[in-house]
Length: 340
Image 1 (tube, one colour):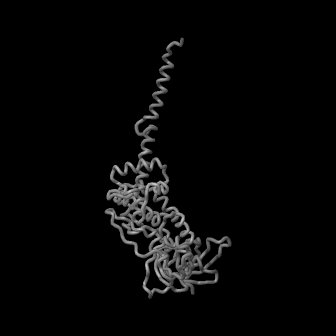
Image 2: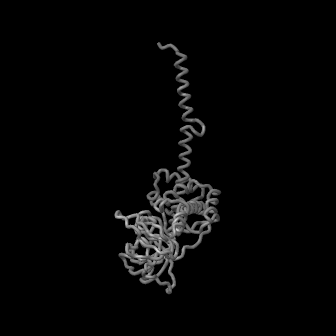
Image 3: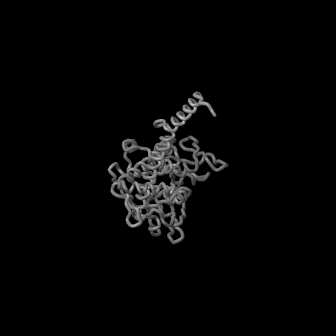
């Protein structure tokens, strides 16, 4: 028969107490960390659901639970549980099997959309991040900024009306500017217009547009429009898109008197034996990047030519105002020239 050992009992007590302290320690114990993480994840799920419903409703489409589960990156169980709570809290309701936003839900969704689009504008204007990164980074920040922080960000940016893709940014009261124009496939041949909006979802189509190096703010002329492809000319280049891709471009028609000059092109198209004058910088170049180009002398009326061709393709060196400046292809594509 084992005798009672007070030292072993004390050690066992201390071990159990230590485990309980690690598990239940206020705010920093594992129990509280897991609980807070669940609450945090629940908030993210709620806000992602609200944003998805907002986009579906705004585009005139309907969405049911099955479709919602497919588009969100959370487990089915978590989404269903959150939907129940959102219904109880009067953020959403069901009309037959279709999910819809209540007035409170739409107001909440607009706050999330506001943060996302302001943050994309911040990334475009104030940082060096590429546009391929804007959406994902904004997705993270849209769940973190408070109402006051969002208003401060808007004020710092000058309360912009549109994000870098041309999407309207809701004001703090939920009002939004209108996007002018129509989807590119609706334009007839020979129509002239300006790209006012580039839809960044779905991601697979947006990446195709990025790969084509199509710029918001560019003036285009439609030269072919049929069921298989849409071809248009812009800034000295010709672009061919499938209709499903072209539908992500919104174009505002311009008056007939607007004429596209044949010799207006992008600096990236300049050949070694050509000379040109700069006529401007594309709206695609923003913030610090735009100011840097202007500081380097890429101003309207300046004469420019290639100083040195890179045998590996890029960057090439351009001679402007007696100075040789190296630019990558994507930088040169944002500078508009008129060849002499």
